[in-house]
Length: 415
Image 1 (spheres, rainbow, N blue to C red):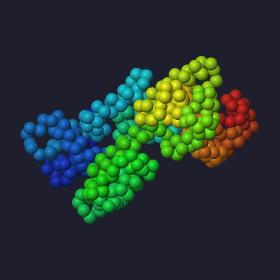
Image 2 (image 1 turned 180 degrees about the vertical axis):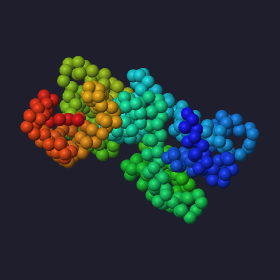
Image 3 (image 1 turned 30 degrees about the vertical axis):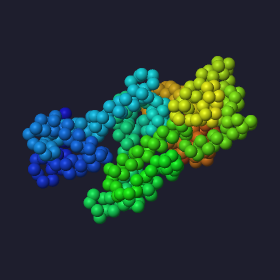
Image 4 (image 1 turned 90 degrees about the vertical axis):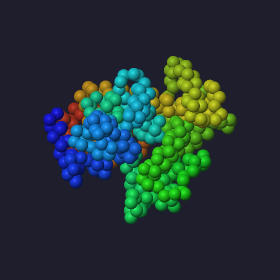
């Protein structure tokens, strides 16, 4: 604790440029910037006010400066809440409990994947795993509330990094503060968001204001509004991208022989099989009716048109396919967690192995697939991987490894 306060004193002295024994708002902004936070001025004002209240100076001076004690409180608030204000923390906590479906008090990789889709991010499970491991401090493969808040800060900073890069590139640096000219706003929005997302928003009548120049925080607000609007469309697409939806539409139309826009349950089952999901047992076939009913509800909630109970139109199929892929992902993650525990690897190590596996798959197999459970390295690829790492397996070691691979899978290995 003493060391921590010594560090705070060093930081305070570093940013107290005028040696006034207090830090003003411009110096506070420099602290925040150097800590890697991108926080709107309104939130900074709230955090500074809270620090002044805790430091008991809010009623003694009318300015917004921080003395040393208040600065310590300010740094502690930043560490506690990762730069979010009270309203944002409440919203994050609500999100945490919404996606903690099993009520465990932790967010698993599957639940995190659900949340990212809700935010309009179409991420593969290995990408979700990598994101989770970056903030999984104790390495147990799940996020508690504190780790989740940290994750949301990193997620937000990743969003803002692109906004800042585009704004800095196109804004007029000779104006103070830097400003994006009205004529450049639409081009800048296209550079931040995908063409697909912007076109969807414009097609649905959402206008991009081009009548006045924008400062950085105004530009952030505009892109946030457009992104939030596009998230609603993403729900209708069940989290799939425009390209994926178009591909699935072609497959759907191929099974819709009578061109009614609807599939019978048997046709939907065959289409699922084509996409790598088999409904085999009698129990699974009986469950399919319930899954279709839930898919109908999800499609309606997402604003899809033409939904009829127990009928599978294209939008219902998207929701059905998503729910069944989730079930498949859940089983794969459960298997991976079991294997990780048996091998005594934490989440960060699993993430590192994923990178090695993916690199080997692309280098030695050269395949392109949509999900990690379809990636498979043949026996020859495994030996190439070992040689690339400087490991030569010969003689009895080679025989033992061959036997181990055969016990796991005679042809090769998935992740």
